[in-house]
Image 1 (cartoon, rainbow, N blue to C red):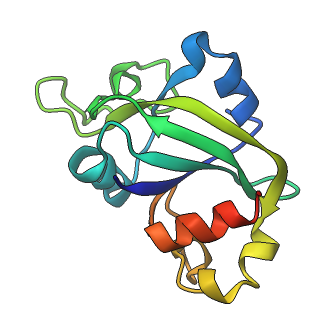
Image 2 (cartoon, rainbow, N blue to C red):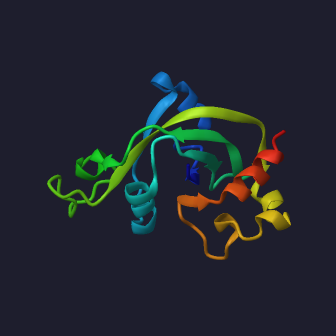
Length: 153
């Protein structure tokens, strides 16, 4: 099993929005970074776990857990001219962008703020706290996963 951190701006799509989705499942679409796309396309597997991270908000941080429930498939928003994620260079015959579906697993009682994560030695090498790290999908090691979970228990 792989572990991930998936960022979303809560005013666009929050963990509560995921909870409200049918079957608490939704497509993770609109990724327009090649490295993040490659993680979804080449590495993510059904059953992988992901921290749901609220970004670009008053208190950015990890708010819960989701599970990957599909393999990568073409991101239809890239083909929709009315979508803010439209990519006129993406071809349905050879799609440039992909999505995966995620399902809600758990919402934490309290947010684990980025400010706290940055202070913990066991998370010092987490991709999230690396200088210049802005990827919306990031790998998390098993050790980092457990260290973060310890903060919720």
